[in-house]
Every structure is written in structure tokens, then in C-alpha cells.
Amino acid sequence: MSPTESKQISFRIDWRDAFDGVECKTLASITLLIDETPAWPITGEDTDEFEWFADELLSHLTECWKSLVLRQTYPIAVQPERPSFLIAEAAKRGASLSETVAESEQKEVSAFEDVHNLANAFGGITGLLPLWFLRDQDRMIIDTQERFWEVPFKAAISALATAGETIAQRLRESKDNKWEKLISAWKGRDKGDPANLLALTIGRDRGMATILLDEKVLAAPESVSDAANDNDELRIAARMAGPLPISQVKKVIETVRSCHHFDAPKLAKSSAAAIELLKSDALRNVRPHVQGEELAKWFRRYLKLSPSRVVDPFSVLGSQGIDYRIIDFGFGTLYAIAVWGQKYGPAVLLNSEHSKIASLFKSIWQKGAIRVTAAHELCHLLVDSDHGLSAVDVLGGRMPPRIEQRAKAFAAEFLLPNSEAGEIWRAAGAPVEIDALGQVIKTLSSRYKVSDAVASWQLEHGVGPYHQESLSQILDLIVPHR
Image (cartoon, rainbow, N blue to C red; front, side, top):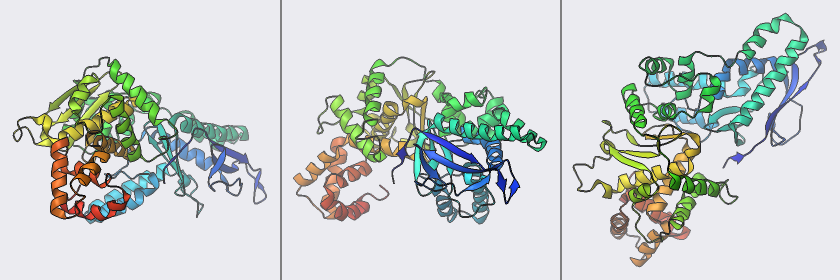
């Protein structure tokens, strides 16, 4: 199911005056509206069936406010497509871990759910649909398990704040002293110590955040509002670095800091046109890999490159005014960094240690894997740069799945259009035998200078739906783990 992009979000709170015949100032019917349509607790129906004590929602929002505003990462090394899939993904991962590690991760997942599933605010209700809120850059993902939406982050936070203030005002009007502590805590929800704000912003624990602050590797956000802006390229890079050890995180940040900012008008023009394309009715709500493919086809036309022409991604990076370099990061789990913000970039830095190619090839620029990575980072700069981008592509990193899927599809289609892969297969006699099909893969990889994995993927999607299923298993044998 693809997400529904929405712009309007609000909580409707209808107060009740009594509970079981006793006067009660906090009992209310609470409904989440998205685009003015009820989305929770019952989707698509205008109902007042759900009544509970609104002060419990205010308590939850107060306690969890900083996490809801700042956290953008899952607590363990998985990247589910939506929050309600987290528990299943954690269970799948836990099956391959030791019992001790699996139990530890389960506790982290449970604590994460306690915060981000707002239905947990109403602990006395059973059978209630979940209500996940999780930030994803400038969006908020809202997931009820039945459906999920992506709404503008600022609109979601405004809706939560308005709901909280509505409840707080009701408590003030009750003139009951027992609410003073909660009202005061709600009022001070934006206050926080620097290490805690940084930890939430980069998705690491307080201990690592303290080290990065003490060693002046990163600067702490000045406030929750400053952290919520999420426009500091170095803090974004630290978050995207995911589970890397602290020494490697420092190396990532140091490298991003070396990418001095400069104007790139040609890239800015290309990026504006690419983003406009993705906002069009044809592409706005399609799956990420379709967006990536269509974006690549468009960009070839934009650059006046025919589908049959072999593309040099490094020449394209240079022609767009992008600083690109190959650097030995000293560890192999990082693929590349793309950065373009107010202080750094635009730049693409590719890891020679990951590609292991410097001693194996006369020209590192001709190796398929690193060319695919370069095209992948180009996609990030074209369409993801409106968020102070620091794209750190790390094995097990934290780039949102939709963004990675789009960039992966873009890189493959930009370097080797699947229509061309299909034509070359047909010109070879449309083989289905493993040896002959393997020769087609070698021809595609050699001619278009891509990896065997990309060649096989583009071939599978270039032969047409009639042949796809029959070729898929054979291609899996030719290129395992593609």
C-alpha cells in the first residue's frame, strides 16, 4: 500500500460532562481527522464512540514531546517501510540473534512503541487501533495499521500542540490544583539539556552525544525548536551514519566538514526541475522505485542523452558543478556521502575502501559498482536536497527506505535503461538458457559499465511482463544476492 499524502490534520476533542453519572472535566470523545475525515480510532466514519480521559493524552504528549518532535530513527538496525511493521521486523531480526541480545532489543522496541504509538496513552482501553507518529525528515508518518499517511511535519506538530493546549486549558478552567504539575510540565515541554537534544536528533544514546559535544565534534541544538529545524548538515550526517562506531562517525563528520560550500546554479536549476517532476500528479503518489525510474528517464532527456548512450556519471556530476572525490575512509561499511546544505557542498565523496578497486583497476572511474554509487548519490542531490541533505550511505544505515529505493532505481535506469537491456537481450535471440543469459549479462555490464547486479535487474525489467517471471529465477542463479 502506498502512503496517502495529506496536508490537513487535527484532533477533534468533544468534552463530556459526566462519567457514570459523576461530574468529570477530562472525559472526552477524541478523534484524529486527516483532511477533515476521521482516521482514528475508526477510519472513515464520523463516530463519537471512543471516550476516555483526555488528561492521559496530555500526560503522554508532555512526557514524549521531544521524542515525537526530534526522533527520526528506529531503535534497532531495521528500516521497516512503516512504523506498524517494526514489531514484525524486530521479531524476524531477533530470530538470528543470541537470546540476550534479542531480549535487549525487544526492550528497546517496546520502549519505542510506548512513545510513538499514541494509543498507549490510553492504557485502559483494549482493542484500540494503534496510532503511530514518527517523523521522517519534513514529514510525519501516521500509521493506524489499517492505513498510513504522510503529512507535513509542521502540520502534525501543530495538531499535537493544539490538542495538548486544548486539554491543558480545560484543566486550568477546572481550577483543580491536582493538575498544576501536569500543566506546568506541558508549558515547559520545549526545555531540554543539550546532550539529550543532540542524542534525540542524531538517534544515538546520551553517552555518545556527550562525547561528541565534549570533543567539539558537533554543536548541540540551542533549543527543541532549533533541533526540530533539522538543517544542520553535520548532525544529519551523524544520524544517517547509523550504527557506526564513534570513531567512524567522527570520520564521517570530519569529511563532511571538508566539503566547503559554494554556489552550483546548474545543479540548483536541475534540482528544481526534478523536484517539480516528482510533485506532478503522475509521480506524486507512485511507488519510490517508479519515481526513480521515471526521474532517470526524464534526466536523460533533460541532458539530451539518448537511451542507448553510455553515461559517465562522473562527467555528469562535474557538469552540474558538484565537487566529487574518491576518499579512503579507512573502513568499508560506508559507501558514499552526498552533502548539499547551507554550510557544506554540493559534494559527493565515494569510499575507495568499500569498492576495493584502487589496486585492481587502472581506472577506478570505470568500475561498475562505484559508477552506480555515483549515480545513486546524484539522485540524492537532485531530489532530496531540500532538507539540508547529508546522505551517508552506510551498510545498515538510516536513510529512509523510500529515499533509498528511489535512488537505487534512478541509478540503475540512468546508467542502463531497461528498454535497452531488453533490446540487447532480444538481439541476442531472447535466450533463456543459463549460459547464454549469462553472456547477455556480461555484455550489458561491459558495454554500460555497470555491476552484474544492475545489469540483471534492468534486464529482468526490460524483457516485458511475459518473460519476467521465467527469467527471474535464472538471473538469481547467475547473479546471487543481486
